[in-house]
Length: 434
Image 1 (tube, rainbow, N blue to C red):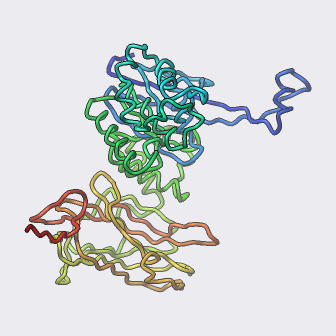
Image 2 (image 1 turned 180 degrees about the horizontal axis):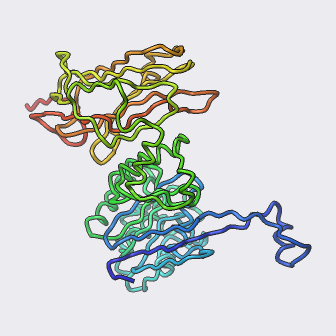
Image 3 (image 1 turned 60 degrees about the horizontal axis):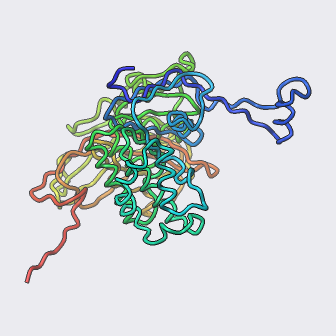
């Protein structure tokens, strides 16, 4: 394997045998009766993935898509049914925190136990012990049996062991949000340190903001199939289609893997190109590769932004008022449509947004043929820079969330500022010094 490659997954398959009752497992083991007594469940279906040294790669997908399964195979916890996994480097895994702890051992003994299981010598653990104890910060409880720990102390110690052993490859599965808010901040800071040191990181999370912030590349899985991989923003947008049932592969594609260009084409499948007739942007910059989907029971036909003087523009002065406009035409009756907007940064992190349900601004039914003009007026307090505007019309049909029309990243918005503060937005602090 190329030395620049940290992890290489080739045609990976994992099949679980599911039994209706324990006796079926025994019958099959003893070859009692004819035929099979289990149902085969394919958790992974021919997945291929290459992760290079120093990359931070995210894996996203719905529950049951195979994310945790592939991590467990990479770390050696599970064996694949077919395919191959090659790993170049020492791994520390944050999977099921504390899974290797002995509840009768005290904290110190468990640190050495876990470190040895990962592959470190006693001397190496000795050198890291003080750092681990300081990070966990559970005080004298470290000398007590693990069975006496609270759940918070337990995960703090487990996390501290895994992340302070100084691995070459870090595997993280939904483990960065443990403990209280101060410990979570410490975990994320350590994570950023790993990135700066050029460590290889594989990161599974449902926190899409963290995926967008930390990952260089994202792999999207669904029902054991790799749908594609690419930039975080693009894969997150496609994942959102999967979540609302608006993602469908072409019949001719079967289970063939899709690259970035094909995913963009599929995202636009069923719509009239990248623009709809009748849209007016007033000279603003529309995204030619916008992601658009929905059932089209309601359709966004016009959208634009105006400044505090009512002039159409995509350049807003920080601290001034601006309005987002959208015109929506109804092709069918909808019981209670929800009109929404979201503003994201260029990496795809959702920074702010609202909708008519949150604002309790419109809770009525609409009839086929009606047109609604929706405006959102607010003060621009984002820092100076470029942002992306997304629009949507959704609702609930018999308690099922339904997307009627969504336009992701449809317009760019530029904020002009002569005073930027820390973070995404300005709290407009009033400062006094005496």
